[in-house]
Length: 491
Ligand code: ADP
Image (cartoon, rainbow, N blue to C red; front, side, top):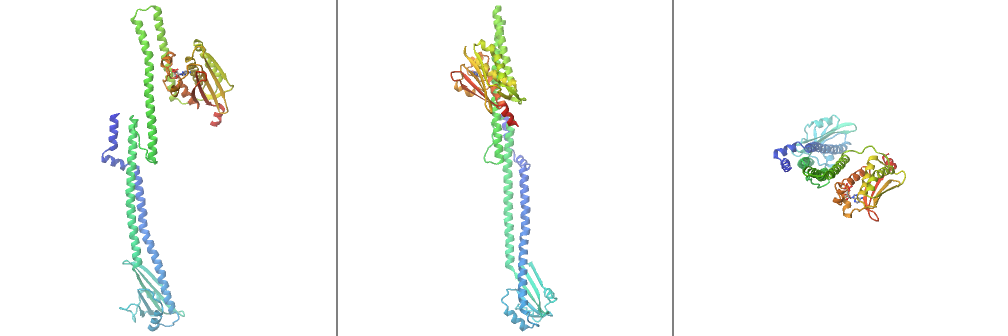
């Protein structure tokens, strides 16, 4: 086992390449990759669409602002049926500060009458900018574009007086502040996205590696358990699925460990029990062969050999019975009348009881029915009454009582025998347990009868307990679900 453990531990630690290969094949890595990919795509969309949306918002607010400003100026000219430089200058100065980069006013032919630009003024020149040309043809022209880190807004509108075109206005506005704001926002979103994605990659891989390591540990422990190392345990920290898996694994390992201990104990007890009668047989037969004996001594020795052979037969049939109980599922149950079976048991044990001068008695309420098999109930009662007779004094008694209430049938097997010491009661149903080994062996017992009784009672949903009988002796109490009650539950 030592070599296996060492090998498994080595496997668990593994070389870097082995661990890398395990990690690359772990499902968690694929989950991590999926999370990384999904968040990457999400952040990519955010980085593309968020700045675009902000820019569109600024575009539409700029457009509204430019339209409002242009309409304000145009409405100031609406009462003049013809425009000249003087009129235009007067009107422009009467309008409050418009905060534009450039303001142009032309006449109906496109000649500039006013230009807010100091140097390079277009006054007196034909200024047919595409927007002005559009306005002179009678339509409003508002254009916003983003260029060289600034929003450039252009608006031109026709000036109408009494349904006649008298000129056009042209507004130009360069906005760096809003452009910078949008740009900074874009940079911030990008920086946060990169940091977020880096954190997601880091944590996803870290968790995948951690989970993969934990699962590797579980796998290694399963292998060690498989090779018979029942001492292996997994850590149960936390309440996640690995911790729950660990606790389920530990429970399993503990149960396997216990059953291994029980199995070893059972095998060693069984072989010891088998060895004793075999040794007696060998001794007796050697004595017959080696010594000159008269016929009556030989007969005595051969009788002893026969007794030992009987004991071996009883032992092997009990061992077989226990194996059957361990492995075979419950056979089909049938309603069994306790009184009928108890009567049969007592009849069967009358010869033994007579030999020991023990009186047998039965006090059974009518129609006490349980769901079991007749054979199993027979064996339960037989073992209890047989024990009551074997471990009794001359002129003692064994009595079976059976009663029932709404839910259960209660059976008591009472005897006036030696009783069972308090310290032995918790062990009485263990396999091969005997209170007084010498007396029990003399009585032909191997300490298996009560464990068979116990297993059978539990098999039919019953319970068994042992108490001292008032006035000396022992009382075994058995409770079984009543046949009717059990049928109701099963419905
Ligand atoms: P065995 O085949 O040795 O009788 P059991 O499992 O039937 O094995 O009983 C276990 C031990 O419990 C016995 O060895 C005996 O010492 C004790 N025992 C069982 N039944 C009684 C009883 N009715 N009165 C006193 N001791 C009992």
